[in-house]
Image 1 (cartoon, rainbow, N blue to C red):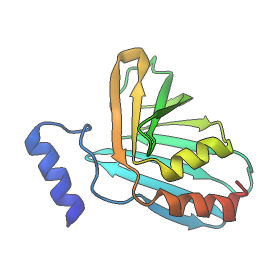
Image 2: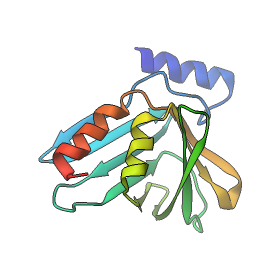
Image 3: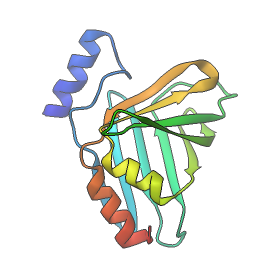
Image 4: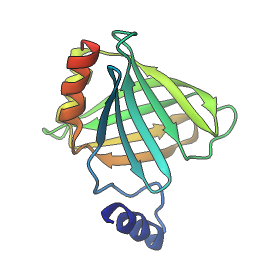
Length: 150
């Protein structure tokens, strides 16, 4: 119900794709793989790791219309001290969905777990694709550590 109200509010405000989600990130573990996902309006963004591919963190983006020459994103984490951390990810796919591999480091994982907000930009198009708070990502970080070894 809360998610539906959030989506309706965003639609009425005319800001689809630019509303912050009031819903915490959902973390699921399936056969040792971890999926941390959030949805704002029709756009879904997720981080996932597979037990069979240690040290790799895949990001996925769906529900957004992008040109065929789309190549990559910048993932921004707003840190508790007000600084912003930036991570570049090359993406492949099509309008059914885009995926890329985000470099894994202890610093990036700490930023992910402690940041207040996240923004995903398409710098080639000067466009923000996704924005969300990061409620629930500490649980994802613990699941990444337990299941994927980082």
